[in-house]
Image 1 (tube, helix red, strand yellow):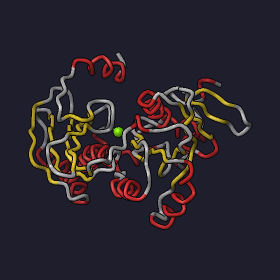
Image 2 (cartoon, protein in one colour):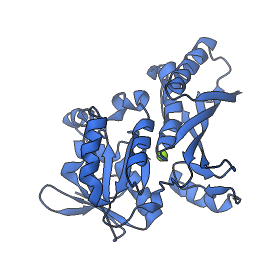
Image 3 (cartoon, protein in one colour):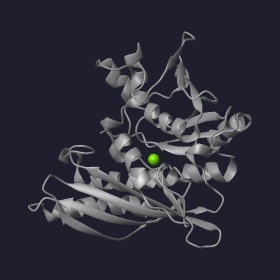
Length: 309
Ligand SMILES: [Mg+2]
């Protein structure tokens, strides 16, 4: 059973209550805990040795990555992170100095965003190290930038560059908390999410949540120099790496097409060092299609592009 299939099968089994405004299926759960003007964001995310990192990555960076992933999901709701719990699974012979390095990495990113680590636990693991971070944050009442909220004819934007994150970005990225809040404060954002599974896969999540489709312009997709470099060594094309490598942790969002130009102008002024690209538009047909340089449309699935050629 694939991860997303598994989740689809589990969702009907999950209980809700009247305080849970948004349950599974978005970047964070949203809870109304009775605080005037605010809603609580709630998230959990795990990294596992051999799946998300190897020992060679360095323990400090692994800690940093683990908490940054949860922060990226708070950013994907344009939220303000508040506090985290850490569950650490360790083999019985694990060296305490390494545990300290992991926590140093966590502490570094937490401090950057004013997040406390308010508890957690350590458990014994029989198969390598794992690290699970749960996080809460706030979002102003009325600001629900959910995936299902995208609308036909919206312009689709993505921050930064995509692909090739395995060469280091997946460990060192800075969650787009500041950028997401800035966007939500100033512009009518319809749908917002972070790119974690690769653009092609995450577009499928938008499609499923909204019942709408997307037309991408292949030439507008910001391909990272790491993806271009990897493509020169053979295998998948740079474009397909940008579509399907994953772990980019950039922001993906839609706005009314009428504000696209004003948004690009304001962004350039505020974040001159971070690219913002308009990569396509929302369409009523429930498909993800990509328009090639030669003017040909190809359907895209969650694996990207090349295998259709
Ligand atoms: Mg996410």
